Image (cartoon, rainbow, N blue to C red; front, side, top):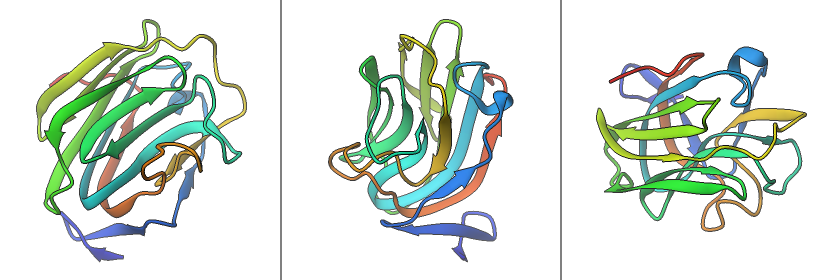
Length: 163
């Protein structure tokens, strides 16, 4: 544990991951979701992913991550929405993703501002998936699959919140 945005936080060193118990209320294929978290990084990597337990990135997997300093959300082999704003400055930023599962509409927010949205409807449900913090797959995101930095105040809602 390290000093966080509010009290203590989880610090990832670029080799750590954590699994979140998965159920239908936290499934990108079955429900609308909002992921909200404070992050501080001077690098990047995966914030949260829904993929298979193996080490390879898979079609229809979902991942919220920071690549080259930019917040992004990718649905494997479908597409990506990516911010123009950089968040790898070592300061705390509030990151949020809203997801409407029926139409595959993803919107990403940084510090309360919408910075991108796109329809990324998966071709089919991802069966046997796991939710992870800090890691997607050995081969994705290519530049930095493991998160390096701090996360605080993670919230996962089984509905798409409005800002």
